[in-house]
Image (cartoon, rainbow, N blue to C red; front, top):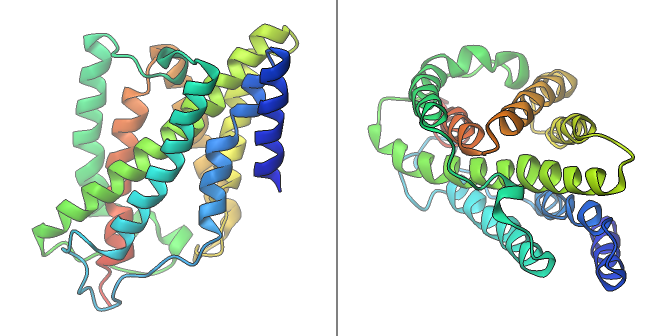
Length: 245
């Protein structure tokens, strides 16, 4: 119902040529993502048989989710005649590119090596099987799909287009958009698939969403948030498909 209401709001605002169309459109990719999450997701083999398969259920499912969410975003951008820079789709300065690359190269290996330890407050006791290097291929598919989808949905549309709406209305500031998208990002990750307290995970990811929003504002690009997000999602794939039973 919420998704239908948002689409109707965009249609009415477009007909009236109202700046509020950006505010109506901004949450739609996130809503599409959350609706997809209501579907029963296929699980990987509990003994790790799917760990190195390119068609492993977590990788394929997340890629399909990303295609749907990003497809809705592309359609909205076309209808709204949105500029790609409003979504953070611009190539930043060389120093920012280096920061994105170096950060990803550090975060990725550390996440894989210490992921089981750092995630215990959220997912309970488990170990990651890193003995089969072939896991990196489906892990990259999973991480790229999830990282690009979530950064474009939250720090791209939800932050960028809400900022456009607030600037046009002159009622609120850009920082409210930064805080708002961080809150939504945290709340969206409070599902029942968490072994520990979902509140802790929501707070942690809300803080991460705020930092990613600030970086996006400062660099005017999603390159750093996407690169770091992809690196952080590598151990998440290993948790879903390559846990030691």
